[in-house]
Image 1 (cartoon, rainbow, N blue to C red):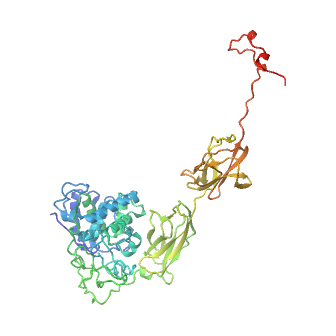
Image 2: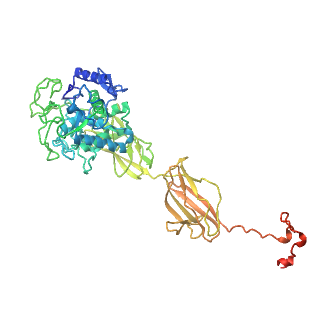
Image 3: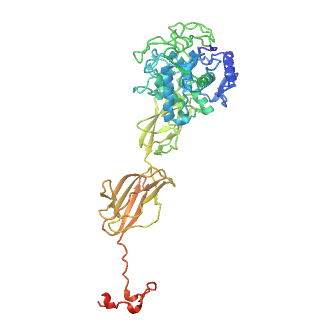
Length: 608
């Protein structure tokens, strides 16, 4: 059995010595994508740690809750390194093996993201790495047949003592705690993140953070937001840090991802190995902080909250399970920690910062952006707090990257600017609501409107006269090109009508016509649309027996109009030749003039 390092600790609590030994081993084995950096800890190749760009505490999927810091064995799975699925592993079954249902959930999520967001290039091994460090693969695979954890997996109360300060956002519905939020489920989502990131991965119509299929798919979408390409080292780093804003976390996840890429296999559910020591946890394998029964009431937790971050009620010792950084005795179980107010706590409301009218044509990007400022009761701006922008209403509009939710940290002036909005094809108004994450202050609503695609100019693509004989068929079809402010106007709705006159746009009852599906004459066509190049080619035109000049009018959404002239006239009659005016002998017939018949013999007459 290869060496096994680490235990589930608070963020950043793994010893540098252990991490350095493990990373040196990984580097020596030439693990792909891992380099030695930052005092011997692994990071993605080409990614330079920049702490100032890391998400602030709490602005993550997990709320920066604690995680298992166990690093992979020093030896790679046996046999030789391979990325093939199902490679047998004999020397490290407890580490290279992943419980069957959990492994299936990771792979199913990868397959769905390959279709939904192909540019993300999400590998299931990344989901497996996160699942490993967050919950030991759902506590070694302690899940039901549909993927739901047998015992809820909960993180510690995020009360600002040793962790981010996140007050309750779900009334205890997910985590059983109506005072503070806790990370929930095999992928350890905090309730406020799950509310918008949750997905139904097993098709049962529910979005359950305790279900490994739902949680794995939600994790995939979370990592693929903002258009990140996870095959790019910098995007991969950003995505992982957005899950838990810790360099140690990044290094640990990358180590497990590369380990699983070298080979893994499926093991029976419930037989996976989970570190036996956890900070402030009971003895049940796979727990993350506190294990409870599923809450019977959304607002009433079924167990008491831990009085310390670890929940042991004993003095804390640095570097040991249940430890924070203080060596002072913890308060009695009946008392609650009273941390100083955080920046979030002093926010009273959000104020609009000159956001203009939000309007865009279907399919276009909004040129305007939403700006909101976090303020105290006295109107003082609050920097470095999280503002969440949520798109609501019946719309397919989204933020850059296709997401309906975006979280932005306020700048030094307290202002958060939402990402650019992209209009979909649905027209009408929708709402973007701005909320302070971790606070129950009223939201600030912005109305945005999507108008239909439009054109302001139409022109024929050809100049051939459109003519036809009575009862015939026009040889050329009418084709027009639509533009808007000089650019191609694609997917614009249009109507074509045979009108009575330039001054009377009502439908004509005679003259040229189109044919419907049954071959019957129609003189108005609706539900037409220009193509991707702004072109619209009308069906063939036919003529009845009426001669004259007729008008075809094409109009588009936005008011562009083009009138086309059509002519119906008899074919030109060719005059009959007069034999008396012709030659008496054709030069090529060889006929003798003396033998030609006389005019009287031919029956011709010049008399009237």
